Image 1 (spheres, rainbow, N blue to C red):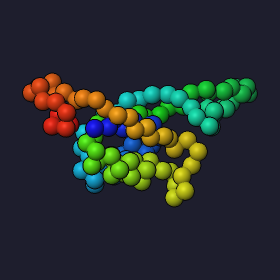
Image 2 (cartoon, rainbow, N blue to C red; image 1 turned 180 degrees about the vertical axis):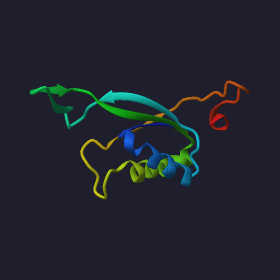
Image 3 (tube, helix red, strand yellow; image 1 turned 90 degrees about the horizontal axis):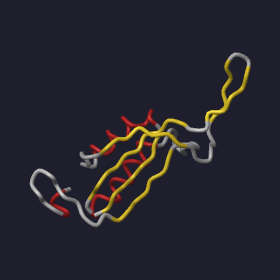
Image 4 (cartoon, one colour; image 1 turned 60 degrees about the vertical axis):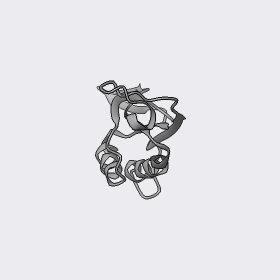
Length: 115
């Protein structure tokens, strides 16, 4: 089992959800978050003064999957998360972490059956 965490642009959320549905990944958690990577935030102007915005709005997806769904999930996030054919700075990151256990609260099922 793996926990896939993806940080994407909020505008790409619907496209990623559609791509995940096509590969039969129907369970995910979406968290609004803020952060920055290489783009280092943005600079804007207000009333004639420049100001910096250090944190940009992002969306974090948390998806627990069995081993056979890891690569299809990654491919779906890549396909839906890119803002252009080549991708753009700030499109996001995908992290794949080992997941020791998963427990369904309702039934007490554990492991692969709980996902």
